[in-house]
Image (cartoon, rainbow, N blue to C red; front, top):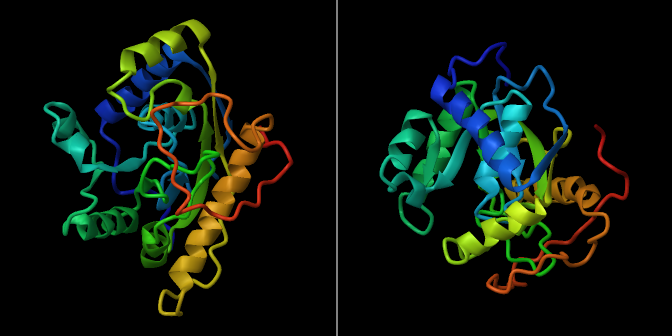
Length: 263
């Protein structure tokens, strides 16, 4: 499924927010963005699938997509939509509310499918939460991203990022000021890489296990795209957040590449 132009146009305030995010990230870190989105996909329909490592991820990905001239509609936790001013802005900018753990969570997939079918770029976190893999590698994903791709026919591009976990702790806002203060002094490098579109295999969601196999391909692609961003941290991250729990119940088989990402 493809359309030459997206009928949904990002509000200009959302583009301004992307520019502002670049400023915010630049204050606390050094942002390096590599890879790109193919020209024929950058205006949608397209699904950007990103790994989730920190509460700071939305700011980083807002900045990185702005660098690449892509303005995605983000699938974000319902809590953000309940925050005064922020929630109103999120709705106005076309972002998609995800009420995890409630009966309304299925509405998010429906809304995302409608957005992608209408030609939008949608950014999702296939893991469905901030990952708790002890090594901070992508953990086993939820099938929602694969089902969204099957329903819309849109391409899926992996977006790997590394370094946001050094800015905000897992339990933010607890420890927020300390984390930001440390980052202002150290200014760690945050790397974001846009990978190549993922081959999801059989596109027929009616084939038994198709969504699970496609989900594994998405997580494998994210792992492969992430590996070159952390070549000196192959097993465990250097920066350890003592407030971050570890959960091995959703560990995913890793197949990291050794080649560096293309610029």
